[in-house]
Length: 328
Image 1 (tube, rainbow, N blue to C red):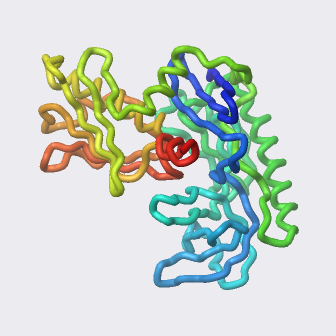
Image 2 (cartoon, one colour):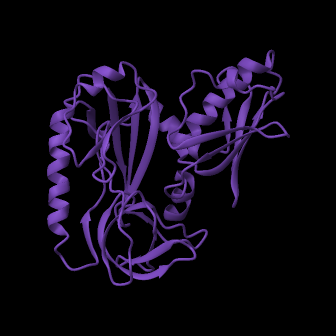
């Protein structure tokens, strides 16, 4: 069961999500600033098609058009002037002068269930146990799709959540009758009815410690040493330092990678990421065995220089970058 802690200080609203007593995600809003566009669903109009780049530009009422891939699944081709239903998959990046990125593969979420009307069939996270049991808990219609994430629990009422998301999808389709550009759905949710949602000034030491860590590039490790995180224009570098705490390289690197993965999730780091390990092994798999990989992350292995290389889908600026931009 997840716990959601929420607190307000001035115009800063902060949220922390805990699972099994550990902070797993953080977020914030400023009362006098616009809400995040990420996950928002819009009815837009194609204003330009760039076939050499395989993208279309869609007018949504923002300062600049959003960029939409021309080829996604089996969806029909687009041309100038088309009305199109899109979802924001990556927010604007003012540091790189990039506008929002869009997708036509709409996803609605409720708890651990993702409703995918353009990706048909049932898909289960590879990290789920008792997969057959979960398959038996849902009855799908022929023209819809569902993804169950790794945090699914059998006690969730999946069919009820699915029914609710079906109704939301029908309502979004009805709203498409409005002239574009128009906002149809602000964002998707991640909470389930079974979540223990404490919407009070309930931040405790665990939450405050996690927030404090965002302001520091140096993160201490539980058994000595630290990792040092630096975001550059092209990639994020995570340097592992033993500071005399190293006895055996394998358990130390494993501990460092586990904390690096946690910080990648907490800070919403994306793009190219390299981890500079202590005495990098020839085989990285023992260091990774059993560790929870951050979502949307792909491990590429060790480089010739011994750097652990990975990439993670970037949806928006990292949390420290957004805090710096909006609070300054």
